[in-house]
Image (cartoon, rainbow, N blue to C red; front, side, top):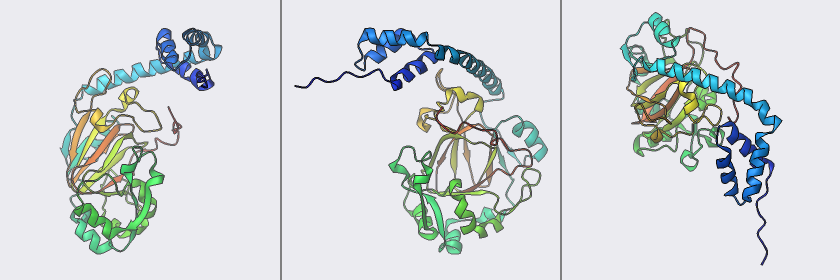
Length: 335
């Protein structure tokens, strides 16, 4: 009988050892972890000891210290932020000056009513959209339930479908996370659904006067989920039909958000219940967005969005203050 070849100490394993050492794990635990893969214990221990003495690892230590310093500063910012309260405030007809001073510049979320009551879009309905635009073709995220990473792999889930049948599915088929018209589909949909922008007004002082095709459409059934992520701009989420539940985590809690790739988190919605959490989990705020309400999502804040009923909404980033927080962003890959 052929003998099974033992695992080799290759560069992938050495990279893992270095990552664990930089993360502060004890050398004996790392050696035991490596030995559990079939590497002889003495060889595993010797390899960890060699890595500890590596000049390449020594070169990474100052970066490790700088990251620890930033984590400390962020933790302090998160503690101070919590002094403002653990719920998202709701304010009716919040004036623009107060909004920018107390929330936009302060990087704090707020739910606002009374901003869009004058918009014709407040009268939108699934039946009305089907009658007006049922024959157009729209882009949609589809087959999302076949892939846990549907949000990361958005390009693989984009398809073009007739709008009318899609709207009927949203209303008649019941809860689903399998299909959703999202902001990512806006490249095509802003042209296909161009007439909708006639029903979108201004929010004086908040947003710049509307230019062609400002805003991104979100239309989906109950059960749609946008997993935890953060945006690279400030964002105003406006609800016209249905309700959404939004979980929010401060940008200052990023070190505890399992940010493994770009702007995405490994935490699932059920992993982070609302409340203070424990030592390993960040505190979560929760807010329900009703028709006619708007939610300000500050740049960098983590959010998880769930459709509680069939929904129609839009999001806007054309604020009347500087909102370019992406030009100098470079962390698009693994973290």
